[in-house]
Length: 235
Image 1 (tube, rainbow, N blue to C red):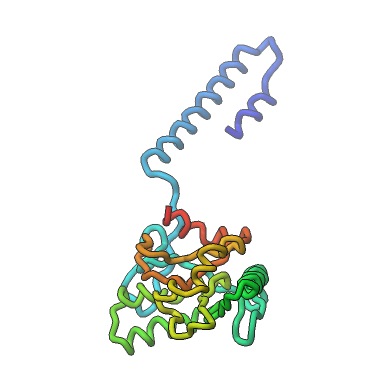
Image 2: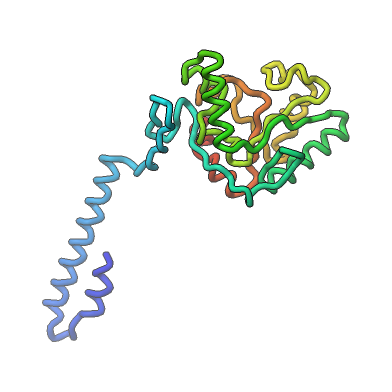
């Protein structure tokens, strides 16, 4: 269709208008055929998909067409200059850290003590958590992936995900029974006000085990863009 303005600019005076008009009609017809062909391609082949994420060394499993590997979506690792310190050894993206501080403060004011168990996790640490524990427990990759993402596929690596616990019930840290605590009940009722969402509820379509302690921050454009594939998949 870029030829159409050029054709119009090159029209001749009225004396030779018939030939110019014929040329214009031919250009318009060609443009219409190109658009029709493009529509046919979209109809036959569907919308273009993102390129699949790369495989993980040491795993025979390969990412599916939507990028998931053993149920998990791929995520980039946050850079050091993109992180803020929430507590010694605990880092998050600044906007997530600020929101989480407000969440903890407001919960504390209501007598609920919410503790951060884990936050940003670099890919190399995730590699150890996946492969080393898999080996120690003699687990298959698929079984391991139900409780721990492969390296490069963990929400923790984005700097937007946290594992939370009830400070008065350390015996229920990282335990499905965490959902019986006051901290979980408070989170269930209020976390959305601080832009935190439960990542892996019961029977989630990603096939990851129920994790009532795992929450991700979705209060910024960057976070929403990162988690949009997972949100869409859960609908």
